[in-house]
Amino acid sequence: MSIETTGRYLVLLPDEDLGAGIQALSSATGIQGVARAADFEDHAFTTEELDSPNASVFDDLGVAVVPLDPDQAQSVRASAAASSNVLAIQPERVVYALGQGLSGEYLRGYRDATNHLYEQAEPDQAMQAARTRKGEPVEFKDCKNTWGLQATKVVDTSYSGLGIRIAVLDTGLDLNHPDFAGRMIRSRSFIRGEDVQDGNGHGTHCIGTACGPMDPPTLPRYGVAYNAEIYAGKVLSNRGSGSDSGILAGIEWAVNNNCAVISMSLGAPTQPGDTYSPIYERVGHRALKRGSLIIAAAGNESRRDRGEIKPVGYPANAPSLMAVGALDNKLQMGFFSNSSINLDGGQVDIAAPGVDVYSTWPMPERYNTISGTSMATPHVAGIAALYAEATGARGMELWAWLMRDAQRMVLPGTDVGIGLAQAPLF
Image 1 (cartoon, rainbow, N blue to C red):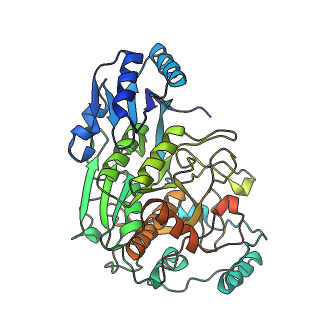
Image 2: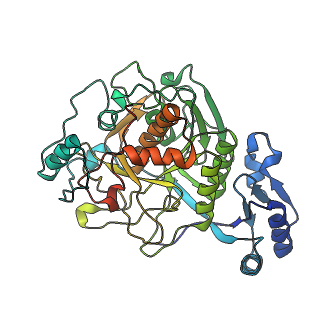
Image 3: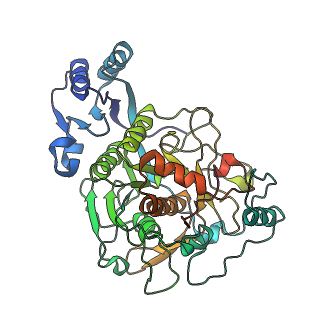
């Protein structure tokens, strides 16, 4: 499987002296036109600037996106090897929405039983684990709430994400959807020629799961952090594809706007033996230092019913991004959900409901049920916002709360990480 690239490159610069890094990049390439996100409102590049022949520098992330010919790219690699002013270089990749085409009808019936039980499980967790191991169904009987909200205990929490900003970087949002009427929504498109209005559906579905209302006009309730402030960043086109520059632009915008949680249900496949991107690893680390936790989908390339299990995708395989695996309503692995195969990065950190997930869809359809690690990711993002409200935690401390309270499972940690994400009940 070949890697799809755009012909441009990502260059990692030192955050301690960004100016020196920009100068080193200019010296290595001869490119003098440099645009900086800090010079734009909200650190948000225009789409025209992102597509220009200039170098685009994301100040908060310390990354430049640059069009380079082979000789220029080699010169930058030599500069990275010789000095500390250029830290890494990699081709810019094409990425996709994760979850399209995985319909509920197609996914029903798959089960992946295993008999490994995590140590120190609580009694109710141990009972549920025993049921799962024996193949007995886990019952979610509350028809007023989706099974995902029941499994993650969102229905039992007193928190709503009040005052917390969640950025969902995806295909945008149906800004006219009645379920979001009256909500605090800020939006920005990083796709040239397309506004934020979601012509795909994937982004509207993910935002619905993370931030949908407490009392939707039609049951069941499907949204987690119903009082959170929504930041809808369109980094994928209406066809469901985008590139690293759009993603980085969205992250820069979200970090600059103090979003506690950044949800990314997007990516590209990796292969066994691949390492993580040092650039996304540093981006995730820098975002955490600024108080923004990036939560990303682990990917859908596995076909467990055929014995094919694939590694966590890009960019979720960077250790400083929280990678999310997908579970079905029997608390078994979604057969498409990727796993912790690559030792050098690529770990699944946590799991959440990702099969037959009901949420919002662009009008007039209004709602839809689809599957993917894309659907699991906004469950965790919404729950992260609940913890941010409950504890005041940000960055790595917020990560720690999610890991501390996750429900341990019978499934292997390589598939579900620490376990099933749980809402705060204290």
